[in-house]
Image (cartoon, rainbow, N blue to C red; front, side):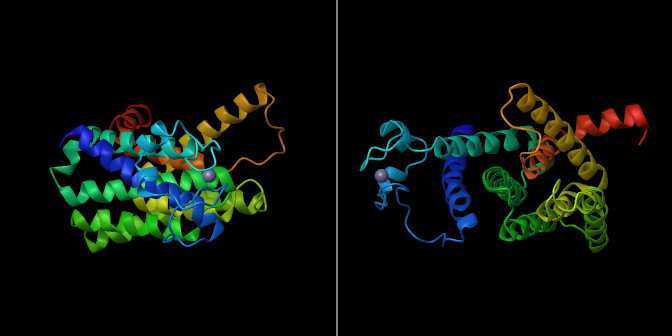
Length: 256
Ligand SMILES: [Zn+2]
């Protein structure tokens, strides 16, 4: 399959993900036509071609001339790039199983939406947690998961959520939100116990690095709230792509 086709597919899906990212936190219908958020003018199909419209309009609304957010082309390009990477980096495990490729695209699409909604609104909508759970479940079904393995995956979800639940309880929801607890369940369900814990561990490392950078730049005070979900999602994506080298490194160091 050509990378250009996958990229175009990704930008088209990314354009839909932008709609979800904008509308889910506001509980707006996702069916309505897209409109400019400043002048409210309904956008024509020509204004909605992924990436290209943004370039042609030089990042400004055709009607009122207000600057459009870089979020739109940014997420379209990100989705396109991730679609190419998933296909090329994980091709051997797909065994040309088209359904498995599609279900992995669906999982990553859910993760992109969760990442940006949590980043912007410090909330993870339950619709997205359910969508993520269902896409992970489907990805297991298309490769012929056994009932026992499915049971293990559910138990893995419950085990992986424990440390996040613990942090949620001792910080009384200030350090972690309950959305992070539900997300941790999905992490274990998706990646298993080992993969889930590695993803959480990576999330903490990324969060710490980001926090230090912000402190050094004096951008945010210690008290100000940074959502933790995006770091968990980043940890998941890293494990998704680099499961093999990470697991063999753990095997070499800890023998597990
Ligand atoms: Zn406008």
